[in-house]
Length: 99
Length: 111
Image (tube, rainbow over the protein chains, first blue to last red):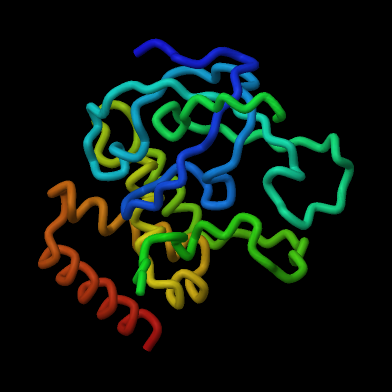
């Protein structure tokens, strides 16, 4: 499975909260950021968690967010960023460029 | 009324309010080192008997109260046990008999 996003692409994290083993932290769901790098391909850990050791191989990205976009009451430097590693199936393209 | 039981799992606490972190080192007990070694062996490729992701999933399935009260390696051994039961490597009966055996040996040796 080839990566559909490239470094610099704006993305939005899906907001889902299904029961299961979720590898996208709650606090980052729904946030918008940019692809910082493609971080490789791995078997889907959300399926490995249920003992399906032949789970499909999926792309992983490092996504960079502005701290002020993650925490509504952020008091630090407006330039501060936060990197989170997120699997492709948790990401959607974002057409907004102000991130 | 929306009843939402899966919105944020208890373990997924990034960004939640928290107190001071106690920055102290502590030694591991022998059983804790054994549990760590056991996971390394169980998750090795040949044969792969469980996944680290199963370990995590099992820990996340603990009720919030147990999650808070159990120590790090207590959570690990709980989850390893459950994964081996799910994966068909350990029956509940085997586990029960072995636990009784160990308990009686402990009582004899410490009597």
